[in-house]
Length: 165
Image (cartoon, rainbow, N blue to C red; front, side, top):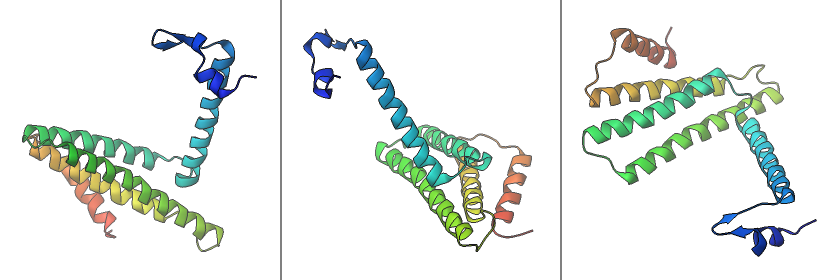
């Protein structure tokens, strides 16, 4: 078996600026990739539980909001890398809060306080509504008209999110 130093620093494996891997090295890299993928999947599963449609919708809206925010800033001549990086950090933090909500649900279900997850769903819906509002604001900043049906749907979701019936 080869040692890691032999794999990465082997002069025979260096051809110009490219590494040419032997069969054993490729298998080692493939196994490492599988281990990292399995570990990453375990972490995601622990933090967010089973991936739901609501999580998928939230992820889509977060991406759409970020892209439309960049577009709106570009149109207004306000593109700023520092603001963009802060925006990414805010979007990541949304998923941190969702993970915390999931873990609270897990504790509540394990201790018998609740039978079904509720807090995570409420947090996801809250952030979905916020992202929808932000997307519509970005559209307004880009002078894009929005259909009245979409604006009405957002009003209904916003009302339900605040506990209204």
